[in-house]
Image 1 (cartoon, one colour):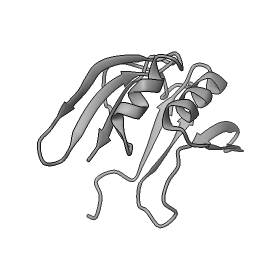
Image 2 (cartoon, one colour):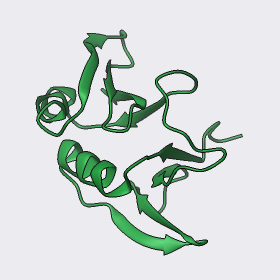
Image 3 (cartoon, helix red, strand yellow):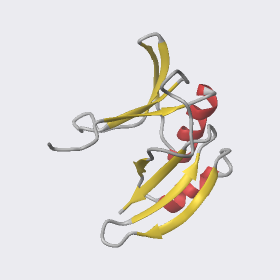
Length: 121
């Protein structure tokens, strides 16, 4: 097994709000399209990479939550992203801290109430 993770979904209650939030904090455009009868917003990903993810509308198996599994987004600078989180409508749940040789992490709460991790080297 090359990677334990191949795809992730981050659920939304207000897709447009969540889409704007993530584009703002990441400083990157997300591709949006209608697929499989729903509006999806795709996080930037390396076309040759093995891992990707998207924003999805709420559904029976997609409900925003602060508890449960947590996705960590890889970012160049946690400080830069954290500097945009509150202005974009989110919250900083755990400030940046070192995890040793693998780098740094922080935890945010997005506009939908999801707990999302940030990771940088």
